[in-house]
Length: 175
Image (cartoon, rainbow, N blue to C red; front, side):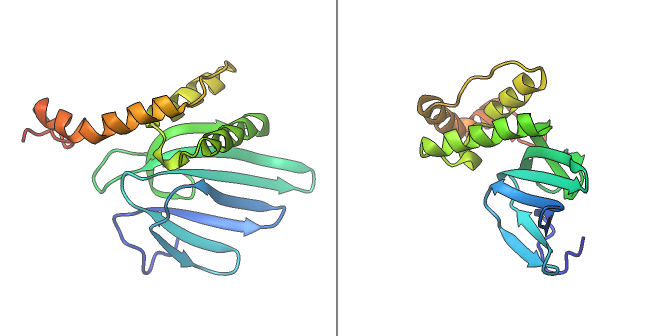
């Protein structure tokens, strides 16, 4: 990756688009920075804590060879992460699905969440983990609801307070 002008605290994703050959794209997420490498490639950066969906699809003369979607949380400098191709340094993997039927199910789930008027980047991370776990074993999963989203937003608004009352900050120290 060429990262001349992108901030070093961002999670970087290399996107490639060669029609009907290699198509890497972002399904949702708030892009903080972008650098175009050439007409087929660009690098985008996500701020720590932001959630995004990265779709990878590739084909050869005989058909599809890669079809996958990963939903990740961008990590802060020094935070633990899992590695993925085309993502630097990596991210907190919330969902990792491959195979077109399952990828299509996840894309339809994202569409349904957007139909509720909810930004998928704001969905509770636990929901994406739930979808991953259930799809991985070919079981049905719960749909995301407006009530669940309201509960998540309330919980998220008090998480920093809850962390301090537990005596630990995010780095494992005490306040």
